[in-house]
Image (cartoon, rainbow, N blue to C red; front, side, top):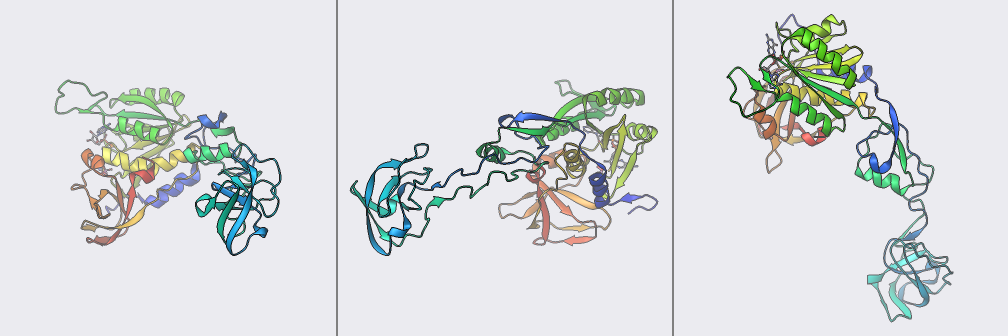
Length: 408
Ligand SMILES: Nc1nc2c(c(=O)[nH]1)N[C@H]1C(S)=C(S)[C@@H](COP(=O)(O)OP(=O)(O)OC[C@H]3O[C@@H](n4cnc5c(N)ncnc54)[C@H](O)[C@@H]3O)O[C@H]1N2
Ligand code: MOO
């Protein structure tokens, strides 16, 4: 590692973000049907049990277990039937059986159900082979959820199955955090903000970071706020940040994060006196500027698209989840055999663009260049190599973090 620079280890930077950040968004009440992707601001409490009453798990015949035994069984059938939504009103005397359908409340006198496929019937009697285990094919009241239980905790982000659970236990409305507004701003004189048909001079490039970062915010259920592009002009950048804080709860800039002559983001944040400039011991993406602009957190991401992407996944995503009320989010990685060879130097944690071969081994992109956007698109995830030195040979276990585990 080059001497004379204070390198911040990845874990130190993450710890700082985790301990310093807290929700910055207000709350609102929403219908459950409108709350997909939102974060609960309060625990939910089951208003009714699931299932609310004991019922049959199958189509078949219900009876009292006490009247049955081993060997061939034959029970007379009671007239009528029990169906889901149309319960049987009477009592089933011991020694008799009743036709029962999946989801039907168990009639009084029934504690056991035999599966239709295991029976024969002439319509007046039902025959099957014993023994049948007591309470077979039945579901107890509240066996899944009991009324009054805490269902989902505050901080939980609602996914489709959560809407099923809340609806089943009778919760129609939930208190949720308002969505976090994530402003995205690109900087640099060379950047052309919108792709058009014009042939550009060689010194100019289309803005790749802004569409990527806005889309990442959307994938994470935040509200992307396009703050456009500004050139390398400190006054214009300050004015744009002033406008940005009125529209966004947090701002991501890209470019101008390191210490060069045109690195205005870090310079402005330093002037504002709120700057944490980090040389993070990470590859790619070591310069990351973090500060407050009029009280709004600003992430000054490195300009290189690969570095901007990786920094946003590793540092930006959990920071946004803290600010948005859903707590700290760790990606779930898993060990897979390497399909590559690498001699990693000590010092920086490295993230390699990677994807799985058909055999489930991690192969890496042909280049580690931080401007090689095609590699981001080629990859389906990242291989994480810990801070120390390591020699990786094919077959060695490496930690693969699929894009999906980052919510992309
Ligand atoms: N003397 C040093 N120079 C550099 C260092 C260093 O440590 N010492 N680090 C390098 C690394 S690593 C990175 S990453 C960059 C980060 O610098 P900045 O955040 O100031 O980024 P810029 O210089 O503005 O841009 C870097 C690169 O990325 C391109 N870029 C910027 N914005 C976009 C965009 N929206 N879409 C597509 N491409 C973008 C820009 O044109 C540059 O090529 O610094 C290195 N230098
Ligand atoms: O942040 Mo730079 O792009 O490490 O590679």
